[in-house]
Length: 489
Ligand code: NAP
Ligand code: MG
Image (cartoon, rainbow, N blue to C red; front, side, top):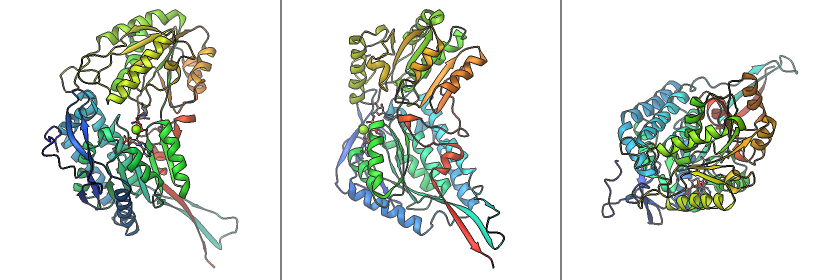
């Protein structure tokens, strides 16, 4: 399905996939999905509720109990996941355009993130057939034989946000399937439609009916029903810290396994000896990529006094040159934010920053009259206790402050309830690794930003989350370990 081909009259909204069949929500209700660049309706989404969640969980449970997926030989499962990747790559042009219409990101970024979604399937396909437990000597002696089995955790609820919708659905679905789970996917209400394409591709590639189910709907209704469901074994969530907290509470009912990728307020430390030509674009891109709507966004900048003025001037100049527009227009480097709600929220933070005494050196205004465009915004000399320095804005807003002593900067960097990411720019190996050790965050970059790989675990310290995605740890998060002991004689 190509977005924009629907209009109100032809909207079908059979956007739920349960046990291999597309259907409308039990409520019969739908909501519109908007293009954030022009505020036009691009399609309609069914508003699933607890009844649909019940049906989807029942389908996933049946598929799990019948071992519809796990009973396929590992080479066949691996081949199917590779086929998912192949099909994503074959449809990349359309999928990327859809992603832009739904999310607003520039086309280059949409192509890269959707390509990254395909890579997730390839990476985790490679694990299938290589998952094994362990054995060893037992204290009781040779009369007993002990070994462990790694088994899928069961039915996994995958809850995805709107800031990288297709990619993040892949990042959850691929390890869940590699581990042998069956799943219920809940996309964000603002970005549900392209997920239909992913689920179609997964089915067409040969994943059996019931193994991947899709329930669209509001987070407070469909999402809440899913995370509280007694027959869901595991929740993998990416989104806001407040909703993460609600999920932990809802999961307590049956002690669901929970992994959470939550927010951040990631510090970026630039030392006097940094390579300015390298640091300027990296600092800028670290916050402005995807209009600041990235969990790892480097939103707090601490720059040493000797480089501070030059750095801020250069970052502000480069920010002023960013081409803002519809992500489908050639040359666009920054699109709109996702929704009117996020637009109001981000503009509120910008007004708050000015009111709290931060010096606005660049941007700060809406761009155009249609679409949710916000200028790349830079605050200088932001007071440490200013809201823009403390809260996750999730918009194109960088707040900077100078420092003299590296120890002070590290203390400021750590004075946050978040711990998702951070970066340091310096030519000194000693200082780079000192900062890398000292900053309490799950991801730390030296002289670069947001360079990620499937081989490396991804996740947060403190209130930035629980657990890790990607790598062996990402797979482990969808598995249980069983110890088996046999008496031999
Ligand atoms: P959110 O509410 O946390 O949404 C994330 C996902 O959770 C969506 O699929 C959402 O569905 C669903 N959800 C919402 N309430 C739920 C509940 N009670 N139980 C289960 N699932 C639920 O995030 P948001 O409201 O879209 O964005 C608000 C802020 O969250 C942003 O400004 C940003 O600070 C943060 N955020 C962080 C990330 C990240 O990558 N860490 C991503 C997105 C947002 P609906 O979309 O239907 O509500
Ligand atoms: Mg929400």
